[in-house]
Image (cartoon, rainbow, N blue to C red; front, side):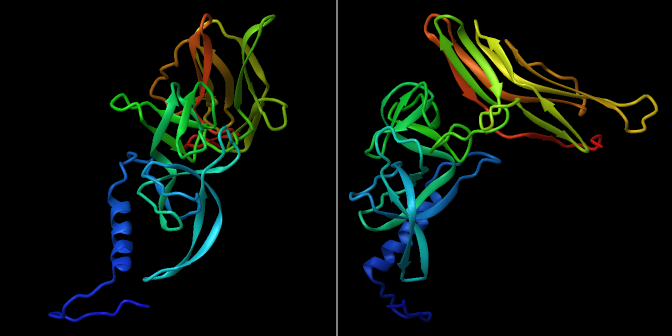
Length: 293
């Protein structure tokens, strides 16, 4: 039944279900913490198919779509269920409000999402099967620490380190350990296992070979791209592109012809073990700027 329009002075009558739908939209719109400039959340409507009521901050996976008839409009929404414990191949989302069983609400699929933590420590999470994350030093979901409350963290959705299954491709990084060779850091195209990747600079494309380093201390892995113009400024300059693993990131001069691209960071120590944190999703790199030809 559609809601009837009213005129000024009329007594307002509204069904409880209609009012709750209005409240759900309003509350979901204003109670999500800001992710900061350039990192706004992307929200979608979801149908709770988990079999139980969802609290705010519940970690779910999107499994399909469902056609819903509403008081104000009819629309397709995503179906949301709990991922299985340890599952890593799914589309993740985090609810921004309480959603009753077999009811609709809203969830974040991209950006910073306040999520409930079940147990553990670390910067990565895996689902516990009940709407929370278990933290450790590896997992499909990267989180940002929250020192004020150990039961809540900020999950980074729709980006590096996010579920479900880890993306593969150019300029990806791997950290491995063997008793014979120790800790090794490798920059490689993890999809085709050939070279590290391609850097595109205008009409110029350079293939960057795979690189491997022995890790004995924390370090940063980065691309260092330099363009040196020709003396007659004809545009026939030269490019210098290398991958480095160094203890500190370089501080380049204020020159738009040099670009530092952070790929990953290794933390920890040899005694307790090293950990790898990736800064970008795998993919070739394209240089832009007025000097690119």
